[in-house]
Structures are given as C-alpha cells and as structure tokens.
Length: 423
Ligand code: GDP
Image (tube, rainbow, N blue to C red; front, side):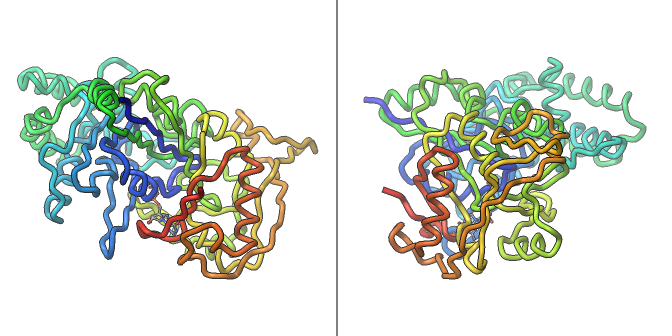
C-alpha cells in the first residue's frame, strides 16, 4: 500500500491563496510539510467566522489530527514559531504530537533580522524584503556557518554558536540595538522545547507513504520569487518551485505524484521588481480594494495586474504542473471586461511567449492583452462548473489553453466551502 504525495506551489509572485488551497486539500491527507521559506510567508485560512494567519506552521494544522512538519528547507524563526504555537493553542487548536521540525532545518536567529534591515537600508537597489531576516539566514546556510535544529542537542555548543554569530554581525554593523540580547536569551530558553520536536522529515514522509498515508508538501511565496527561476534579484532566498519540495523535506523527486499550481485569476506582486501586466493607478487601486490585496505579513499594499499567461505557462513548465487551482475568481465578478496577457512585445518589436531570464528586460516588455467579456454575476455561491456564468467558464478555458494545464479547482471566496472541484 502506498499513499500519494502532492506538492502545492505558487505560480505567480506569492499570495495566490495557497493557504486556502492547502486547507482544502488537507482534508484528504495525513501529513502536511512546509519545504522552504520562513516567517516571511503569510497564509490566511478562514474557517467559519474565524481567520487564522500562519507564517511558519503549515496551514494543515487547522485540520484536527493532521501531523504538520517543517522541512530542512525552511529557515525556522524559533521566537516567531512559538508565538504562533501559543496563539494556536489559545484559540483551541490541539497541538500535542502534531508538529515536527527537521533536525536539518536552519535556525533564523535574532541577529538575522537586524542584518536584513541594515542591508536593505544601505542598498542602492532595494529588493523590498519583509525585513524578517530570511535572506541573511539563507546566506549563513550557504556560507556553511548556519545553526541547525540538530545543534540544539548540546546547549553549551548552541550558546557558543550564537555568540559567534552575534560577534560576526557586530563586526559588520554599527549598532545591534538593545533588544538583541533579550531575544538571544529567550531563544536559549526555548531551545530545548524546539529540540523536543526534532524529527527526520524525509523518513517520516517515506514511512507515512509506505503505510498508505497521503502527504502534502506546501510551498511558500511563488515561482516568480524562486531564487533560481524567478525575477532575480527581486526574489526570495530559497527554491519555491516544485523541485525545491523534494530537497526541502528530504525525499527523492520520484516520490512526488502530483504538482498543483495555484494561480490567482489576476496577478499581484508585493515588494519591488517588474510586473509586466500591472494596471494603471486607478484600476490598481480598484483591484486592491476588490481583492483585499494587502500583505498578510507586512500589511503592504500589493500591486495588481491582469492574468499573465506568459508567466503561468513558464510556471507550468518549471514546476511540471499536473493541474491548476485558480483562486479569487469572484474578485473579477463586477468587471465588464477582463484580460489575459498572451505574449510580451519587446522594445525591438519582437513577440515572445517565453518568460525572459533578464529581469531588466521584463521592465520594458509590453504585454499583448486579449480582452474577454466579463460575467458581471456573483460567483461566490457556485459549487460546480456548470453553476458558473458562461463568460467565467470561457475565461477559465482560455487559461487552460494558454497554460496547457488542466484546471482542477476554482476558488470563489475565502471560506473553505467556496470551492469548485472540476471533475
Ligand atoms: P498565500 O500566501 O498564497 O496563502 O495567500 P494569502 O493568504 O496571503 O492571500 C490570499 C488571500 O486571499 C487570503 O486573505 C485568502 O483568504 C483570500 N482568498 C483565497 N482564496 C480566495 C478566493 O477564492 N476568493 C477571495 N475573495 N479570497 C480568497
């Protein structure tokens, strides 16, 4: 008997509604594991009247009884982790025995945040990071000076590693600020509690699959923010794409059965960097209001634009998508017309359907928009494809055609039940 392994990956610049899709898909799984990123992610899940915003703990935790893991590919902010842990407990979520963290996961330590803000403040070209220390933590990992969950086994050694980190950061920036030493003390206090949750995520997943359990690997951010495949340097510091899932939890890629790509029915982007299908100011503001496009982690306004099929096709390729989940279709309900970018025109007049590697050229391309009639009908009550207005179905069909990927799910509202499973 063997269970199935599904990856859920964002196909734009993050904030596609992965939290909601993981929540929907978690119904049929036993194990949910996050494979990259840190507390810069913000997944919002609505259950009944309640809203949960999760930054590090996988969204699957809202489903009673599911085991949730943080893979080796994440950078684990210990202080934020326990804040989230306590908040969930306070709200009645039973957590005992339900959380595991990879022994190989790197820790995001209080000095990483200080470094992140200092680097961003001095940069000539700002990335627009969340200031949560993610970049510096991954830099320490790649620089082979990181501190891992396994290092918590020996408190003396852990203390020495922290001391070494503080000294190194202290030699790079003028002031470490008053809060740092308090945060370090608190980190040491909580270290044994985190170590109690340490596990080998790869072998847990392998054993689970062998025992017939279904597994969901949850990505954060999105394809265009992938360190290798995104709009470099305006990216996050990890591999958000599906290939990162195998590495980020410690299994072989042959174990993955399905890759669900989550796309919003339009495009948004937070932080700096190009957005080829970006709206003019008036429409941008309108969509931001309609879609509630403000960051779950930072509250920053997101820039909005039409659905970009060039990016979505690229995402289908680099992730090897087996299916799409289109979210926030309802946000377009009141528009008389909708559009999809089907290709880009370069300043030299050439047309391309390929997402360019040179990020600067992305600033200069003009999207060729295909206009489609809107549906001007409330879709939030639709539960089957046949219940969607014909123009909404036409819009979805066009997305399917352009991305060459079947749509398996359509989300029409924030709530768990507001979902269409395409059969
Ligand atoms: P994530 O990082 O990809 O999980 O995305 P976020 O949680 O940051 O943003 C998604 C936001 O859209 C959340 O507030 C969700 O509740 C909301 N959302 C998800 N799906 C839908 C949908 O189909 N319709 C509407 N209106 N909102 C949705």
